[in-house]
Length: 99
Image 1 (tube, rainbow, N blue to C red):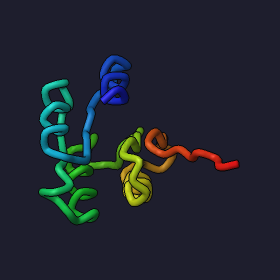
Image 2: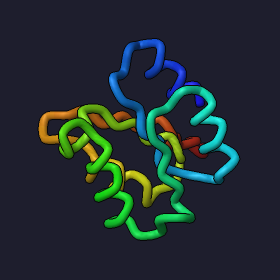
Image 3: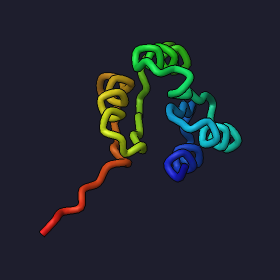
């Protein structure tokens, strides 16, 4: 949600949130996002990608994508959303180095 707030106050022209659970998506809607895509309602990556592109600018890919889930399969999916020359930001993953 922090990334969503930062995008909003930075002037993002359209904010689309893909994820779950529904309660989190409802909160995102209340915070002013333009579109939410529920992964439980649209379990297919292809369906989510088509839906996202239908809501993005002129049916194109997204200019900027933030991956905040921390779930490994979300990374290639997020990369499929971003336009050629666009920006992909990985927020959700980190590694704790063992000694």
